[in-house]
Length: 232
Image 1 (cartoon, one colour):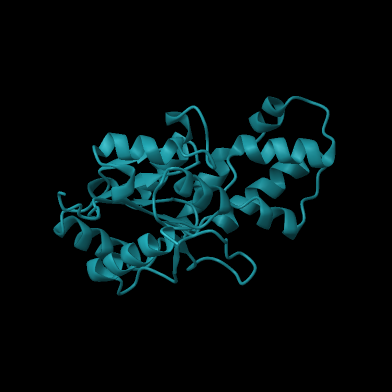
Image 2: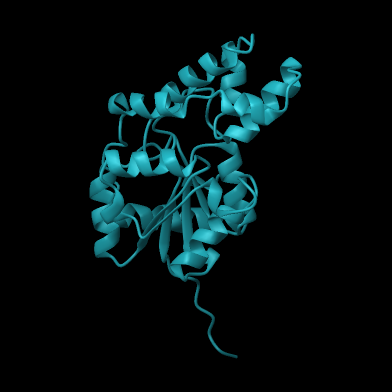
């Protein structure tokens, strides 16, 4: 019988909001303002539950929860995405991220971005923080028919990279993202650097407090821990 070797790590796929950038505060301010235009006052618990939701998922929730009468498209059109993007000048890039990209690139590991955000927001973040040289693939919600928690986006990234899903490690901060990665058959690490005590999302195979000092060896340890947890 031939020896079957375990898969090697070929790619690390990063979520954007809450992983690459600490954008939740800016997003919450913009969402509260947008909902307020329609007479809806969102509370803190609702905002916490909506972490990782796409624009359509957000407005579907608000429409159903608060009884708004118009189609979702009407409310989505009222959201000022440019206002949110303008606030990114004050947004923190995850400390240690560039150094980690450099180590992964040196080890021959692909790096990719998979976000539920729009292409406009994704490209704005990539441009603002000069991420293009570090990303082999960057895909957003417009690139697949279904959004997270469906696995489509992560599977599309793996396909674009030419690697198997089982060879990918996902770093996510939200419940929809963690669920999507698991459905894609990918080990997933829950990212906690920007999460409050009530914002830790269950379901990840392992957890990470931040990128500073992580390095390739640390990623390999996370990979091994996540794969081990996934087999249990």
